[in-house]
Length: 589
Image 1 (cartoon, helix red, strand yellow):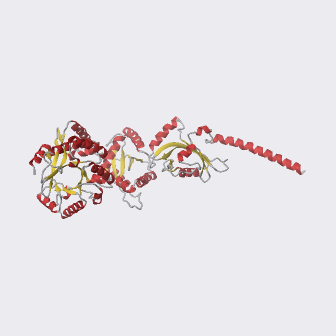
Image 2 (cartoon, helix red, strand yellow):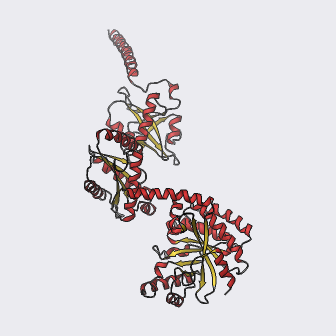
């Protein structure tokens, strides 16, 4: 009897097991129709596949996933692995697994992240991520497939459009979307006779903050400012991240300048309080404003004019508001015209050099001269350098002008050999911003060789403000020039920076004290004290000192009593054309 019961139970259990197995298989077939992850193996050839445990540890990864995330055979991140970030919607990009974990915790079922951004080493790639959280997964593992391929040609177009419309760093609408939206709004406004205004916000002294505190620090500032605009939406206002530290705000139907000024002031007050940390920096911003249709009828024109207005505002003061006006456009047009005329002048040999002599204060002997470029304009006559060099620097023509000055000055030094000894130097002003020293040296070598002029008879003059903008680069450039055999001087010293602490870092021969400290030295005791300090420090470091802009014998007497070495200025001579300068040299001491 017992055997019969046991046999019956066995048959029931076997039948139940077979039934459950069939039912399970049918259920699995049904689930396979629902899950997008159950593709054939060959479809995963270029896709990264991972299986995560219920605590989000990687327990399997295929070859593509290992390469992408820098995993070893045990599925652990290698120390040299690149950081991979994931960006979903308008959130900031963050560690891939951190963002994925949050997404998994928010969703109960399997899901698909379509057209999200995968970022590595500053480069972005559009991807699709499939996550399987099947209810039949007994071990509660999570399968993840990262599809690097576009789903279809139609979706590929939308991917490109979406990628360009969002700023990667901040999650805000990008400058590309700003161009598109403003052009569309311009066409709409033309039909409806509406107006709109652009407010371009820029952080004051942003480059100085970045140099001092680093890129990571300024990126946090930019993210905080972006979050302010994201967290404070306004149906009448659209905001965009432009380039660098710039943000654009677009507002419709502002009728009066006072209304625009009040809105700009409110923006400045709000954003001025959003970033505070233990560095206790004082963050200020300025705004440039342009309006449709007064300041332009298309996106490019309006944005350009907002940039011009912002630049003018920041040049005047911090926390400033500037409106574009036609005068700015006139100045810009003048610059464009002058640039064309400079280019034409170079072709037509309209430029020439004048030479201002430099004298020894002790014996009043001629020891050198400074070469100063002039422009013999066919309509406006002789033009001094301060009227056109700023345009040449903006447009890059400073390089061609510089080459002309070097060539002419070295030729002049060759002619000086007939009357002067080897200690006589001609000084040439050099723009380190535009001149690449490594490219300059071979050209100078050719000129020195061609004209048989000793290298140490040419002195290069670099302004203090230019030198101090990047002291490490300046020190390296100076060393290259010094090793080449050229004499170096720091011009306009004391005009603003007075960078005493950096002097010992620069391999210079001479300091030239700016005219600002000389013109009232007979009456200003403070300037006398400053000049004495500069002279004493320079002599301690082994440098000579030139006083610029000396115009009276009283100034010369005081400078001599302070042990200044040399002087130049109208007391001794105005800048002379080459012929008059050579005549002066032939007179002898």
